Length: 117
Image (cartoon, rainbow, N blue to C red; front, side):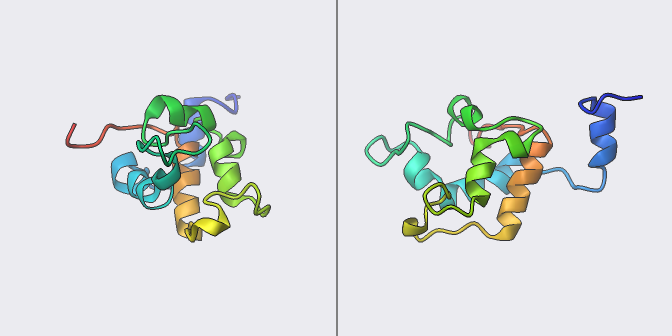
């Protein structure tokens, strides 16, 4: 019997989910909704977290496990004190965007540099 963490079982369980591409699917969501507070501008950065850099972003991601990823838990939190983006930002992730990020994390949270780099 395969372990719940085995690549073969993971692939079988998620075979019906199309692969999520970081540059095509995730980077635009982060850029529109998260990088205002968690991006390259040190004067605007909150929580000492950069979601435009892999090393920093991986501190709130558990590749393969969206439920254990602080990034995803904050996105779906019902608590307005924990929810990201925060309500006062005027930004809201749609259910489709949340699901795309969940799938990306569940598929291993593969990071890719911007195409121009």
